[in-house]
Image 1 (cartoon, rainbow, N blue to C red):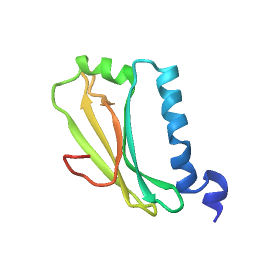
Image 2: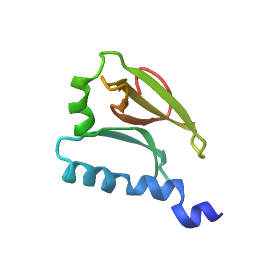
Image 3: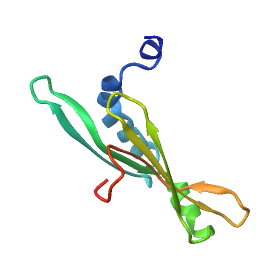
Image 4: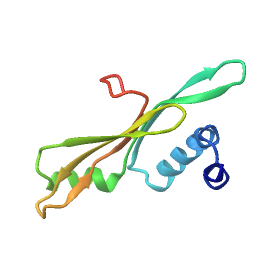
Length: 112
């Protein structure tokens, strides 16, 4: 597939996740990063994502200037594993939407 040639497979992206999240923390020290992976196939050692959460420091700091109402929007990621991306956002005094954090979860639930 052309998409896999350009972007790689989902599995190769998951393998790069730890390095990417480490780079986020290194170059944005106040950024919050949490993630969990689950073993998918013990025989092959393949992993799938339980959840990934990150919030950039400027977004966290900017929340103090926003209305204290948070809305959460989500979209389905149509991959082999059917993840969802959730983005909580708030509106600032200038009527601009500020994304507060980003999460990729396997299910929209309280545990995610």
